[in-house]
Amino acid sequence: MEIQGKNLPSNLQFQLQAILIASIITLFFMNSNAEMFNPSHENFLTVKSKEYSFSTTSKGDGVCTLNEMEGEQWGMVEKIGTQFLVKGLPFFVNGFNTYWLMVFATDHSTRGKVSEVFRQAAAVGLNVCRTWAFNDAGWRALQISPSVYDEEVFKGLDFVVSEARSHHIRLILSFCNNWEDYGGKAQYVKWGKEAGLNLTSDDEFFMDPTIKGYYKAHVKRVLTRINTFTNVMYKDDPTIFAWELINEPRCLLDPSGDTLQTWIEEMAQFVKSVDPIHLLEIGVEGFYGPSTPEKLQQNPKSYMGEVGTDFMRNHQTPGIDFASVHIYSDTWLPDSFSDEHFDFVESWMEDHMDDAEKFLDMPVVFGEFGVSLKDERFSTEFREAFIGRVHKMLLMSRKRGGSGGGSLLWQLFPEGIEHMDDGYAVVLAKSPTTSNVLSLHATKLRKVNSKSPWKNVSSEDDEL
Image (cartoon, rainbow, N blue to C red; front, side, top):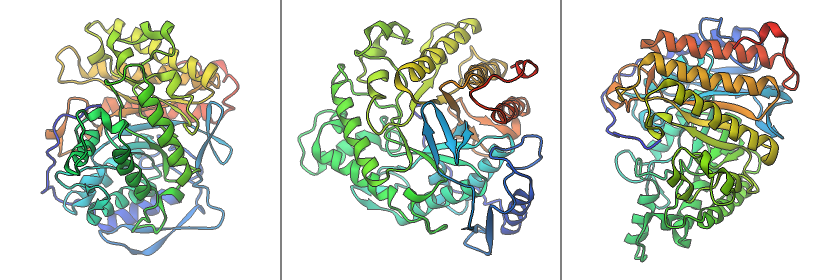
């Protein structure tokens, strides 16, 4: 999603006290066994009671230090064929996007919002969050200039990773943006021009050796960062579900897709050379390209086959572990009729899940989906039905052991920052019916995951 509006507040009051966090975490780890949150419980995900211990010494802002114990179960997520697994058990992505976490975590006065969004997400059964591991130049920049970093902002990202783990939420961390928000490829090209490079297009981000060197340096810096809260290197931390090369890449300079494909191949190889363990995805929107001309008509608009991406070709790249697809029928389709939107959701998802299962042999995660309520055509009721339709398609795939690996709602907000809402924000504290939709999905997933993912569940569970 191209983000509209980046002016973040700097004076929100920090609301979570050390004693409250300690109490919640204690309650969290006293509950019974499960890999995924049990929405019938009032607070958080339940895990094995002997899985972790916490130091009684808080480390700044009441954050408790997480100490690994022998035999702990917080293992790396891996993929075998079309399935995600953790220590041999099925894992399903039931998550959300909140892109601004690092920036908020940098300032102690707004850090509580990070804890708040994780707490609320865990309470409705969400288990993965996708967020930015970049902010290039500008306000509260992580990377001030190539390979020059603000340590305080990096500590903010450290807090995000640590806090996610304390709520048993895994992270997808994106390295860069195709769009200008938070710097992105345009800022890399600007840095190149300032260094004397003769660049004329932002898409030269994907071509110029110097710019690619800037990007690789940033990737390596993140992968080898030692978290100041947990003392765990990022590339060794199972809290991180996956890395994402770039949010929604497009290369209009080369509609053939060759330029972007070459870049994906080079960067996937580089990431895996530094971190061969974590999963890796691209971050594309899922548009079909020139390698599959028979599928171009499945794109919502004709121009989408000429933006330099190619779903099938891109995801056959060595090192790419799962497919990424986004769903925005509210902006892609001109119609306001709900049936047309729901029909599109079903066909778009089914096409990609079929391709991932039959040709790519990998899971597919619908990394962004949502509906903007700033569009007068749509209501909260429509958005909830839209979310429900996405969930239904994934549950159907899950029951048959298909490639539907999960989805990430765009986007989750805590209370108090509604002025940043791009229209897609879901504030759970103010949206009880939407919270119920998310909780119900988590309950159904838990029921399906309790059975073999390769067997059909009994007919009594068939109602979606």
